[in-house]
Image 1 (tube, rainbow, N blue to C red):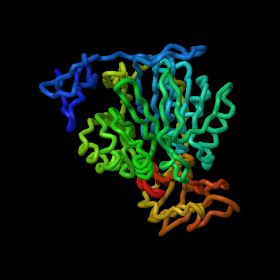
Image 2 (image 1 turned 60 degrees about the vertical axis):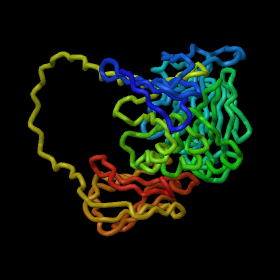
Image 3 (image 1 turned 45 degrees about the vertical axis):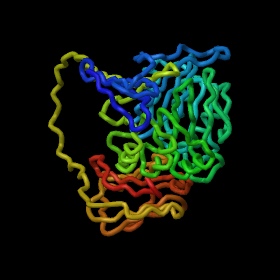
Image 4 (image 1 turned 180 degrees about the horizontal axis):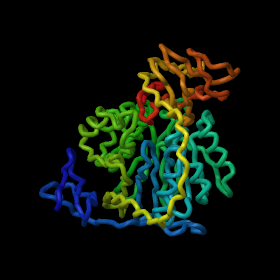
Length: 449
């Protein structure tokens, strides 16, 4: 079946929805001519449904000619960001999600063997955390950063890995420069200069090929958007990779009205503690008539693929593979064992608690409430550091969890975390409190989510 979705501006977009097999959803969009009539709105361009255009190994590739098409994979990395752009035989990875192997695994599943360039838009852990493993796994020729200082352990590790990547150039990006990929020049729209706020300083890139354009926002917030508007760089775009996972601090109405995106792609986790994407952001996107494509629709792999011949473009999502069937194991006759001596079970703390304060300068997290805290823990977002409450610790009122030196003995009102400075940095660094079942029960936001 087909369903054509009109837009609120001169019709240039036709969105075809095809349901195939066991839940495979294919989103396909084609440019339309200026005269709107019946579906597909008077298009004078043939609709093309593209299959994957993954490049072969790009080692030893000579300077390419003009691009005739490209592919963008908005990789589902949960609550984070990772985007793979392929132009001809060359590949660019923008960001790498959180500090885990997921982005590496998904790149390998896509057949990636090397990368021509990697861009770390800024130092936040949900953008650079996975890049350390990426650099260890794939040969990378160029590594781009925005100049953020190494203010967290994760970003420090990434910069160290970049500095030792064999044969790679490490380059700092700012407005007015560009990234070369497969015959295309991707201009850098942000930052003009560093402000000290990691989101405001996020790298923003724009890809234009023929009549098709895509803009990649990283975590650019509204001050960054205002800077781009003032510089005359916020312009009509076909596809907008929405800034900061759809946070309310990004995607201002003024910016969206200047960009007029036909399609808005949001990368976020299915269940995340920030409430991304924010309802206010979704409302603003609806106001400008943008169609939504998201990576947080199921618990599986919701990676989204966009392909274009530089005149038309289409979207589809791949079905999540079924989990493997376990291999039967040989039956082994158990050897009788003596009845174990009963032991006292470890109690799972059933406290009622919340984070009530975060003093980054003083390196102190304050937790308030009452009850047994066995099994409870705190996570620092930027560094992904974890503090486990001592077994048997009972919360009565408030307790301060402090890092830094000198070390001190724990008490009912003060607990020592680490000698390292975990919170004193310029990054947004939220504190998360989890109970002994691993469920998030409290978030204290450093500034805005």
